Length: 335
Image (cartoon, rainbow, N blue to C red):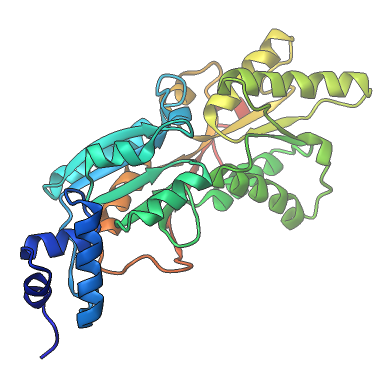
């Protein structure tokens, strides 16, 4: 019979619970005790994989840049799905917002989570720290080596948006993108370029423009649209006849700039966004967009945390499907 947790506890002169907390890297122990237990377990040849972490407390980690739900409510819906799934499974959820200047290690000790769901963009340094915690972790709307993740089918969504615009005869389609460090934005940019290739159409790289860092998201998108308009006028080029924006908030901000310049929507420039936030259907004109079940992202994240399979070196994404909703901003109410 192999070495048991009771054998390790006896040899280290501690309780079984202490052995369990030490080998699961849970809080509540001194580093000296944790180190001693781990060394004894290794000497006795105890396989710590026999211990299964009982998940009860789950922390939803969100970067501070995503924490303005009034401007960009996408992650509020993801959080709703996460909390709903936790309630159904009798888990205790908590929410932690963090940024590069916060002491994440201290905050994690206070939350004492058994598992962690990371939503949206975070700095690579934070991911390295999270990996070192040795807790079940899932990424939502984010992808990184060594982590399980659930994402939107961003490339498919971009393809649906572009196919819709091409079908309406739009050929000079601009893309307003954000930081390509964001997984979802980089995938939507890739889908935008692929759509031109797959349609056999020429792509003008001058029509792909990224927002400037350091500005609020809506101001950055408005600035990007201003630059597109100025660029066309200075170079005596025609305006783009359509804009595909990386999310709805960006599309709505860019639409307001066009209307302020006397550019008609959709007669002069058609608009398509992504995410289908509530403001999209309420705008004037209503915004065509790619919709996704945002609550499903949060629910699926909880399901992945509870699955037995551990993180692997290169786990495959779980993709949530997307659908296109045509509205008046693109000049059509049907696909």
